[in-house]
Image (cartoon, rainbow, N blue to C red):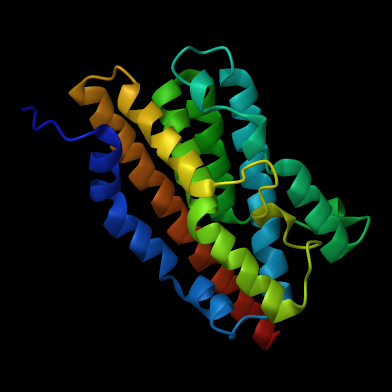
Length: 218
């Protein structure tokens, strides 16, 4: 009997600490526990816009790649929802009112780099963002609905109308990860890129917290 650990299991085990650290950052914990404001939430949505604009542009570039293509589906696309959320939250001139924070700029640059040159790196960021959205992200959306009185406007990013069963979708996604014919060295590189993605996420929350504090004393 084979004792080989599926790559999706290995990836989850090796990244669980970084994932937990990112989720536990003060900005997000405050937002989820009632300490953040509507403006804080809008700031988060704005940074997501820049990240997903880069990620989904990378998906378009990678759509013909035999390794990356199986992971790419319109059912995951978030950019139109983010644009609608920002119009609802900030008005028709929303695009003029948002700017990427320093970590977001570095995060976007990394996505653009690997999304043009390295399918494994693209998949690492794709996995980190979208499987997170289909897990804790759905919970975050529900909390924001309760906190700020949103129905669907303002939280469309967290609503996946085309994925009826997120758990089943994630199971298939992990099976696809297990099926990619990467050797041990490439698997290690992908794991390291997932860890880098979580680090970007952690640093982004730190940026958002610093911006929140500055705004509160201005």
